[in-house]
Image 1 (tube, rainbow, N blue to C red):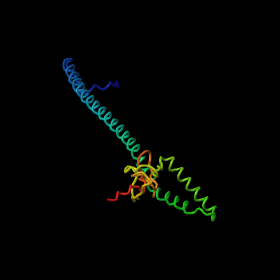
Image 2 (tube, rainbow, N blue to C red; image 1 turned 180 degrees about the horizontal axis):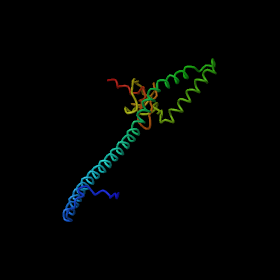
Image 3 (tube, rainbow, N blue to C red; image 1 turned 30 degrees about the vertical axis):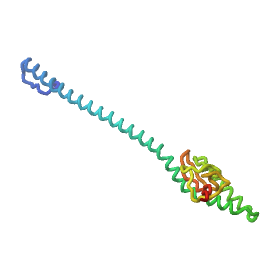
Image 4 (cartoon, rainbow, N blue to C red; image 1 turned 135 degrees about the horizontal axis):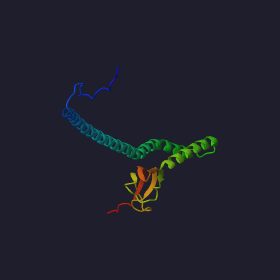
Length: 186
């Protein structure tokens, strides 16, 4: 038996006129061209969608990075703020214990205090001096007014609690006593 190759769809074994075959092939070509245009349009739409999704993802990634950069200092400031009472307690303990009794214990506490201060300073904490400075409501919180002629008016005469800056921003104002000149007697 002699096997022949199958004919393309739309063509039959029966003898058709060459014009009919040509018309059938032309019709098939038109349909394929239309399908090709539809598929190309879908391809462009999918490619555009892919580009938009990639751009959206890049924007999302950049926004996350920006938020992390913005939130990290706030989180660090919050942690440092929570550690300030412990720092104050260390300072009070060291100031209260000056006698030679338990000197080794005092040295141990002082060493821990210095390590804590070093860690906080490296993170951006900075104590500022208030005593002897003019009163600044942006940096100081006055808890007491003391009438005195020996100090300038509105001068800080004593610091009751240290004030701190964290990365050049006020973290905690200093609690201070402020001198005021006595009112003239009438």
